[in-house]
Image (cartoon, rainbow, N blue to C red):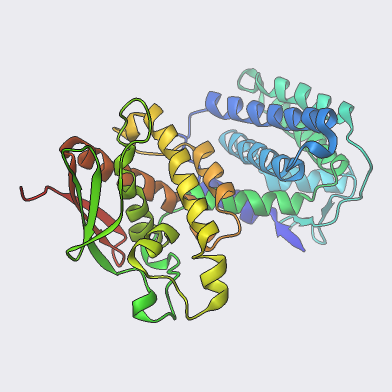
Length: 374
């Protein structure tokens, strides 16, 4: 497998949300990601086999570091493609790079010579050259080129020591940045009900009444029929968790996924035994409920996302880890972001009004609030 470095640089540029004259945030981002790699290696040395996910973490951190690196080089009119081609021509890349034609885009080989252990010296050197990069604004163009080339050389050496493919790093990073910062086109998102009978599908449009009674419990009603069990906050201090089913409705309307809502509305996909057991069964419900409870705890700290126009990357990455192995992992981070912001927008209105009508439209991937008729 090969990876076209210029294609990666073009995609990285398309997901760059910084202003063209912003340098400091990019330098801080680069330095922080390199620090993340060092932290991962330290944990591996301390915890050994008890450290789960070392390789994935290093791939993630190194991918982000290279994204910042390309953003920095671009702001100083340095071609990363040419820089790596120069390294390849001088054999400074330790055979990590391969290019049949020095004038064509550099291709990145998927195979890096395996080495045992982690080279602390290479990591420390990467840290030192990252620190040198913090002074890049005060350098002339030749000095900038030298420090950028040194970073690339040491960066590739670290990947080699970690026995991690450069191509894989770039592929994973490109997919992540596309998922988080790419343009969200709703009509191309997955619909997990396609091919199933209509009576097994989540309703394309739904209106669910959520009403709080004098006993403090919240009741749900759909098509005139009560569904689910009445809910309270189940905590000492009132926080509105009794309305959290709004988030499940957002999952259904925007993500087209909700094992909890399938159970409530009796819309499990029983015509396919594997889907019924692996996606709509009890474990799927537990996963969604656990995710909703975890996210609710984060939302409380953020005033239920009031005034927010985005969701932190850390939260979105944690969500993807949470749902790995389930069909909803196909949904990109920017769709999750829309789901969270829209869902908690409705949640805040329901909480303020002690109930409401929650209107979902799966075709439009929307969720709206309407006041109750008292």
